[in-house]
Image 1 (cartoon, rainbow, N blue to C red):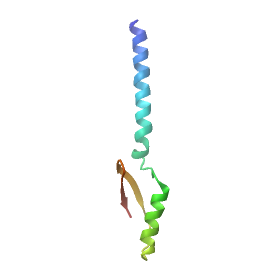
Image 2: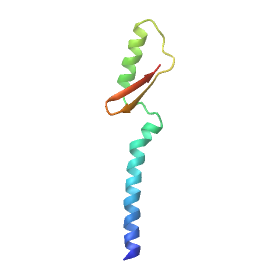
Image 3: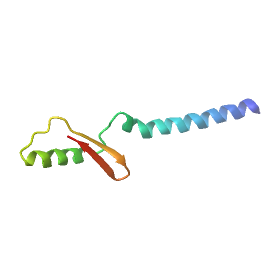
Length: 69
């Protein structure tokens, strides 16, 4: 029974770690969560006569975004 419990425990931990990697992978790789938001920010800045060379938009919390341009 003990080896069976270890196998079940390892499967539970593997499932949890896979879900954790999927949820945090985009954040760690600086993935852009919303392309339309990036394009809107780019157009707002460029409509004022400036040029955007590098734009980073990322989620800093639920419903909160941050921009470096």
